[in-house]
Image 1 (tube, rainbow, N blue to C red):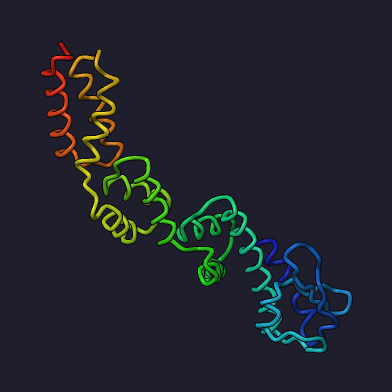
Image 2 (cartoon, rainbow, N blue to C red; image 1 turned 180 degrees about the vertical axis):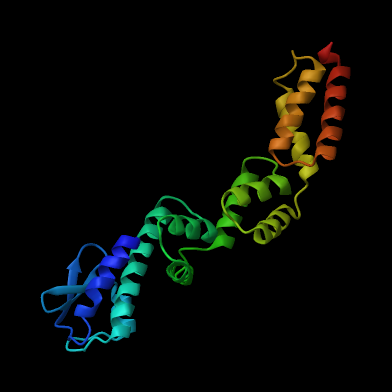
Amino acid sequence: MNEKRTEKADRAPALIGRAITSIAPAGGPDMRLKVRVGRRVAAVLRRRDVEELGLIEGMVLDAALVDALREREVLGRAMDAAMRWLARKQIASGTLAQRLAERGFEAEVISCAVARLADVGLLDDEAMARDIAAGLRRRGPAGPALIRDTLARRGVDSDLGERIARESTEGFDIESEARRLIAQRLASMSGLPPRTQARRLLGLLARRGIEPDLADRLVQQAVRHAGESPESG
């Protein structure tokens, strides 16, 4: 990135004081526009950038406008990278910003790219966090700790993750859900010693984010009950 910026900075003075000779489609699926000054391509920009900069044929470029062309072109590359990542998987804005920084984009460009994607609804941390939390709950009991930790690994801000974890577990009877899960798993552990059953069940509940005190109480009750039942003896 630094070498590219240096190269373009060296070419920039040649554009100052010259007029735009054409603005025409550059081709490709995204229909960008190629801004030419004589035979030189001054920039390849998104249509939105051309409109926002007010570019028209015959406009004379000054130093500020040349800088703006370069900034918008770099922003376009940042947006391209971001769109490729988002096309594969939902990611949080913080994760996206980190990836762009690793690619060498500057903070101002990253901030603008993130804001644009959020404006058009392609980057929505809260919606992503709610989708993740809902998916965890569909797969079984999911305590706040599991949801918080999962969201943190996906790059969701800690305050937002805490709120989503709290809201997504409100109104659900985690204890009843945990009891059902224990009962399902115990049915396949009848031949194991009680201590082994308890250890495996505690590990299972821990992975589902169930608080340790609650998990220990429910597992001890279930294992003791299973040991006392006529079928176990």
